[in-house]
Amino acid sequence: MRRLWLIFAQATTVALAVLFVIATLKPDWLRRPELKPLRQSLGASAPLKLTSNPPREASASREDGHGLRAAARNAAPAVVTIMASKAPARDKQDPWFRFHEGLRGEVQRSPQVGLGSGVIVTADGYLLTNNHVVEGASDIEVRLNDGRQAKAELVGTDPETDLAVLRVGLRDLPVIEFGRIEELAVGDTVLAIGNPFNVGQTVTSGIVSAMGRKELGINIFENFIQTDAAINPGNSGGALVDADGALVGISTAIYSRSGGSLGIGFAIPVSTARQVMESLVRDGQVARGWIGVQTRELNEEFIEAFKLKVREGVLVSGVLLNAPAEKAGIKPGDVVTRVAGTPVRSPGELLTAVAALAPKSKAQISVQRGDKALQIELLVQQRPRPPAKE
Image (cartoon, rainbow, N blue to C red; front, side, top):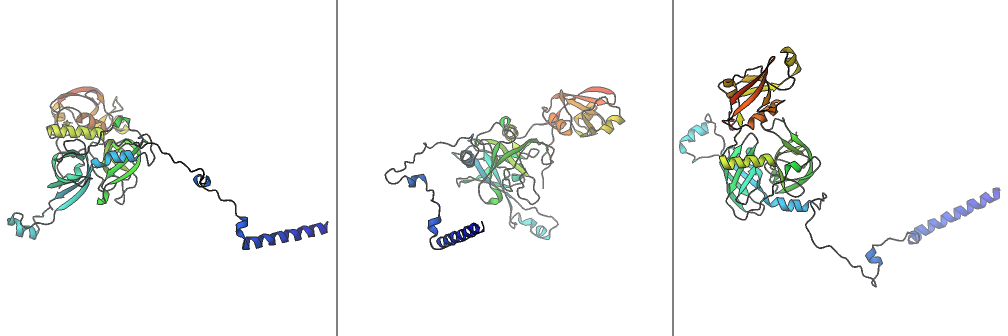
């Protein structure tokens, strides 16, 4: 038995030695056959015939990189760069200003230039952008993606939704298609198109992260689309489009600690933008109702302290002098439960419900005052325009 093990060990040693020599001197003998592409393995006698489908527009239902080419191609031409020039603020205590005050602008400092984006929405030259892009601007220019450039007329602004409407007098303008916001849902693919950091038109992709974001403290009236598509400074006023390239939102703000994108961006829904644009073009302003109350959330402590018979509503914390609410008899401590029949459960809902009322119309306000339920009729006024920022 011992002799057999000795023979096995010697044979194994010799075999390993032979393999070592072959691997050193003739390594090709030990390689596996290489798998070649099919067209090469067919040889000359049977040439490979490559066929392709006829060219077609990429399907919007495809949400891979190739499927979004059509969306970008359809929407990008209608997205423009906006350059807004603003005269520098002059401090009347500045000796330079006092010395040159009588020169009537002959000595001027360099104007401030802001960059943003906009979207062409009609063939006759109307554009949507953000109010903060053009606010206070003395000169506005628009640069199209095809290289054309023109001065823009400011049609109107709505600071409370941060929207503005411009108009340019160019022909053959590319126009974006309006999307259907009611069909947009969380998880849908979207593209953000604009000119971030003035590097040139840029398209980024992502999904809809949330719908109906409110009470973020960005605008007075909020109903944002949240997206993780990269939005950066310069994208303001640009387009958020769906997988078909249709406009679903106007990019307006980002959540950021550094000034760059962290994957939390916000866009104004196209339904709001379209309504504001139509009002500005038609009337030069957005007509919203106003009753003149200050409000806060209704909490359990207040309900218990005043023994209210309602548990939902909005607490009136103050009433402005000579406002419609004050004239109608609404008092601090009242709880508003309905506005023109619409239930309200938060200050934001009350604000939206009142804004929807037509100025100069009469409206019924349902109020709980202690243990009494009251119906108060008042005459709605036009919501005052907020003061412009310096």
